[in-house]
Length: 267
Ligand code: RIB
Image (cartoon, rainbow, N blue to C red; front, side, top):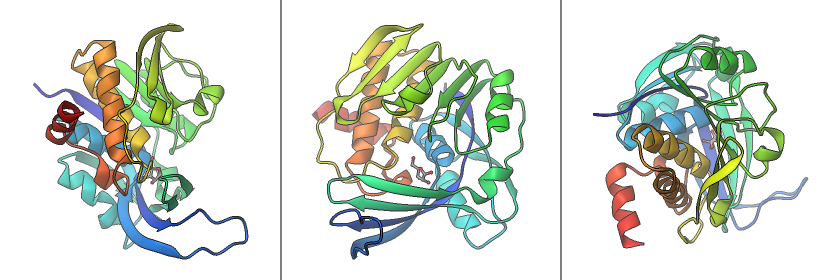
């Protein structure tokens, strides 16, 4: 039976330009490629979990503008159930990606700032692209509360699962289970401060690291809910992140279960 979870978080449209190298302040660089994708950490994680077979509800907000339908397209296509309010401008992310897969992102939250706090039951997954009150309320009654603390800020919360990269970990350390990602070096899982698992990441030619953390987070939540042992869950999640970084774009690169399992078998 499919595992069930609710994601409360951001829904964006990503405007992505790929270029030889990232511009310095004051510099103009000619991009080689430009694309527009549905994005936002919340929406990406909801789509990633749904593609891995979970039954997902997404709570969030988009604008009452021309970007709104596009922003929701990936969620609808992945079969995510939507509880979305509409007002103001849809959130956008301006993303630069260089030929080594490094990125720079500026996010305008727009309607994401209007997501209303609410308590939720069951498994809840949050990120930090919505106001603090939304995160606190979501944690209150959840039976399992998972937080991907990105973009990083310190919150007085003790989630059941915290997912952070090595930089975010310096800001937010609390959590019963804490997964720290180390990019191409894989990830480590701690339980009550003690390391319980570690995994290398599969070697890839990096194309675009955007969304790799979303893929990792969703895969870890889904595999833990499915009862996978820690080592196996972490290996699966590292593979999900790496597979996402091996293709251009965030949401569109998130692997479904068949693709991911097939890819892992060939590694
Ligand atoms: O994690 C990647 C996401 O961060 C992008 O899709 C962008 O919308 C930003 O929110």
